[in-house]
Length: 63
Image (cartoon, rainbow, N blue to C red; front, side):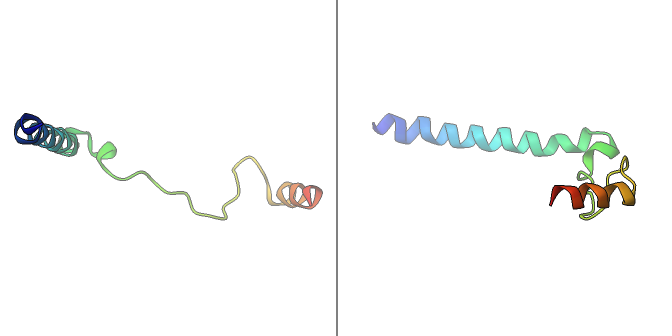
């Protein structure tokens, strides 16, 4: 058990740290549009395929 605690566990911790560091550092090499955060849609906007009149009809018929 001492071998695991002295050699294997620290190696696994360092390995996980290195993998995480490589994954985070890989963003440097991505194209600029992929390195930015994903766009967030505004809440309350209507889908583009429904007009406001159709949307109110859908709401009133589903209630």
